[in-house]
Length: 77
Image 1: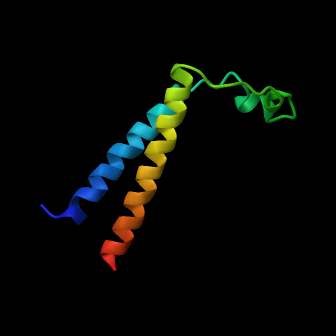
Image 2 (image 1 turned 180 degrees about the horizontal axis):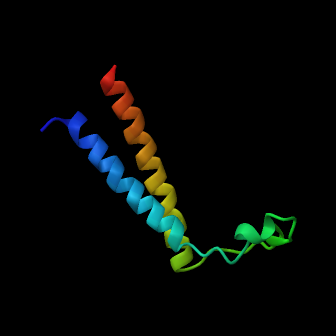
């Protein structure tokens, strides 16, 4: 099994995990409510507990996905 054949499967897994992490994050603190000109973005707060873990996990998953996409691009050349 070659590394270039494993990368797409890992990317699919990471994309599913990333979607799940994004959907698990609380959207009541702004979300679409501020889309129509509401005050949704004016309330800043410190992330604590599970919210902070989900936020950091989403960032790490996105970075891993980006690194694998670049690696796949370089391996294809």
